[in-house]
Length: 211
Image (cartoon, rainbow, N blue to C red; front, side, top):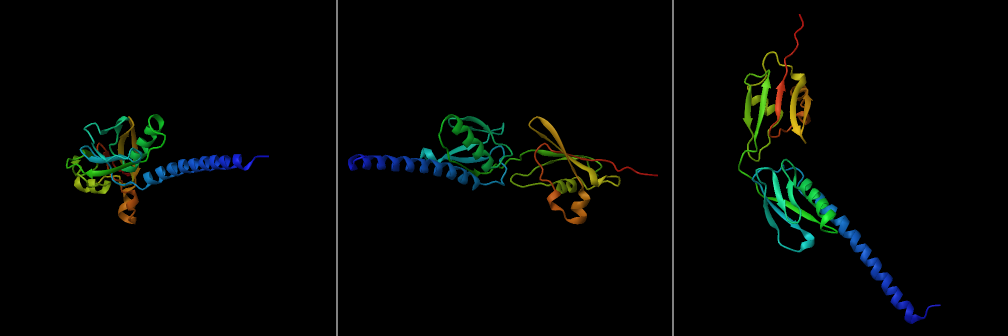
């Protein structure tokens, strides 16, 4: 049997061990929860200035600028591509990178300090529209598929509105999305009205005519 003089130190060690494990679990959960509370709607553009902070560093935020390659230089991690991603997406990516190489746990905060005044790029409208043009996207303002078609003067008489294609390059591959625009016009299906990204090509095919 243990004497009282030995039992007390054993209880103290067990308490400290349990307390340490509890803190570790709390930091992990808190890190994920903090990331999920970040902005998940704003798409980052070239020239944006971001406020960046790792909570565990206990230091003031640093300002990071999105360069012409769509990247930021993150301390201890290096170049991270952020173009067309949201602050929440970027924070989660950086957290994973830091925790795999530098930190045991990293709670990353990213917010947009200043939005760029430069246009993020152009979209291109071709096929059966009244004017085949490219349209410059406006800074900090979303443009949808329907808005782009209006900019191109609307559909021509022979346009196939049921099979409008939005062609987008992602991760080195070209991905077309077919949109039935008649559902947007006639049924108010605004969920089908795609938000455009720089470099998107809108192709309106010709409607087959049966004689």
